[in-house]
Length: 260
Image 1: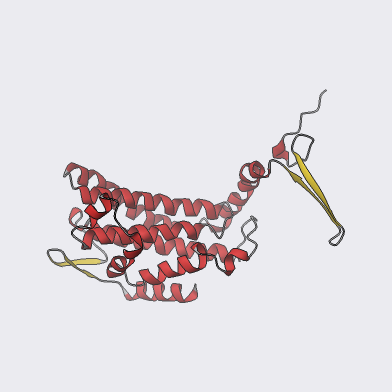
Image 2 (image 1 turned 90 degrees about the horizontal axis):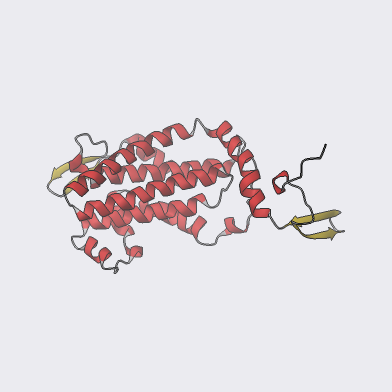
């Protein structure tokens, strides 16, 4: 009976995938490298890492998922109504925000697969999207400037801060520590199975939660007239809204930003 031929997914080094070997006398090691490291990492290693995440953190995803679902409910339904009413500004807002929601989902997927530095790089673009949408809402010519390809997105954060307190601090935190090169980028971020006391994973979950919350708060004001119930916004006049954040939310946000 013939033995089953070994495939690269078995983690073996063979003649066809052999890349090179290093004899390290200083560390008493022999390190062997293959040509298919990328395939092994995404097809073999990722499965076990993701499984460990589901075991340890599935309950912590429940409140994030609930808020994510609420935001998507508002955004997706607003997309159809905005198209029906031929409201080009709101159509663009829904499209941008649906992509932002997909970015949040992508950050969860990356975290689940063991990446702890990269998720917050993605989340930075969610804050940029929120600021851009706020720019459309506040500036009468904002949407046209965007359509004409003349938008300076770096200047939109001031509009985002008019909607959500601490949005500027969150953008700075994500930019300075994760997007721009910082000390975190020189640390070894190896892909390993998740554990209960994994601080980088918990920091990422907090980031994902707060960005999801920001997306929900933004969706509520942008599509205010499409829905009857509102949690964070109160309309005081045409085009004028008051942000009403609970003390619990304020405490949660301030502690989160301070802790990170």
